[in-house]
Length: 177
Image (cartoon, rainbow, N blue to C red):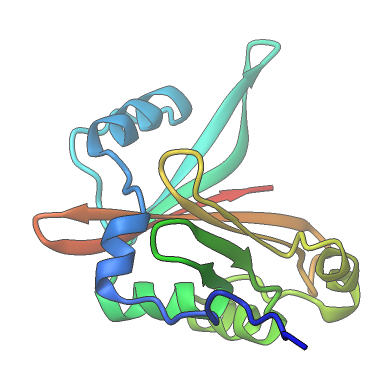
């Protein structure tokens, strides 16, 4: 009797995989987006600065979220991906699975001084595979967290994208509420 084995087990993200599979944020497109959604003109982005984003509704600018860019490291990017994205399949045809890792999300939000998710409110997101999503098909590649805050009971959506500029790594964090 032949037992079927999976082609490969889940692999750990490496620098080579990161640079091969991830599409990075384009700086020019980011500046265009900032001009479109923010009421401030930006020649250069400041690091560790919250840029509010707006949408014009009935002639009034309504704040819909924020954009925040911070310097990161390759190690931090790989750790983030290893905690939330599993790679299976072959190297030529990888399969990406978003891991619904609630404990890692709590740890990440606490380390970033962000709203910490509430487990009771997140159970539905976890069951429906919506707590963590990984979008490799659209450019740029993004990692998305969707949850309800345990303090204010507000719905929060974070979308993380990676930016590589002058051989330095940055993470672009979009928040929508």
